[in-house]
Image 1: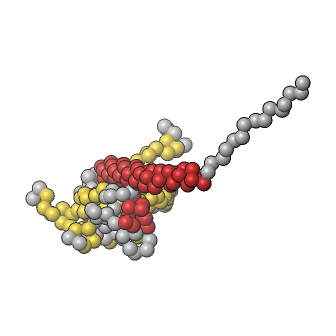
Image 2: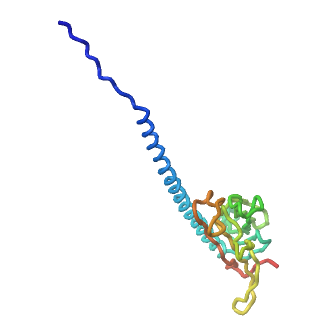
Image 3: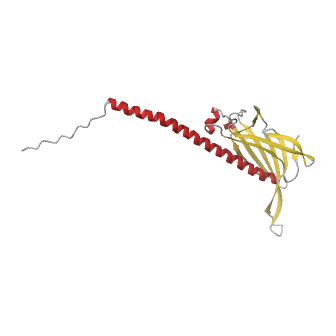
Length: 227
């Protein structure tokens, strides 16, 4: 007796109706999930931007405060530029001295410069606060030079709809005598609250910004240049 060959069961493919249903469900999930994920990404970007701006401002002000303790002169150059002059000492090798070294004074000139690359404060991605440093030896020769960006996405502070100068020179009475000061005003991040779409694309949804507003004066020796 011959055995009949076993025929495997037929596998039925998806019908057109089933494929349309599955495709519709997939599209519905995309429509629901993508906006939620986009909104989440924007929220995360906003939080990260705010944290970055706050950290930049805090580190900058801490460093500036330390700089001013050794400063003897602040020169107001213009509304976008000031120069901080400080004196520091260092030991250098000296074969002619019994100790093998000598102490010399250095002059440290630190320029703070606000740069707007396209002359448009609203394009915050093109605005920077730059530090240019020059160290001079006892003979006035330059022994060290450097330049670095210390703040990004900065712009002049807006007050009553008007851009304020980044640096402003003024005189005020202090302990019965007139003293010279420099006021510094900067905005990091979004310029206004509520923010604009062009800033949201850079910093995240909603207002993300930090305002720096402080008065600078030398703490080492009284002296401030300006007019």
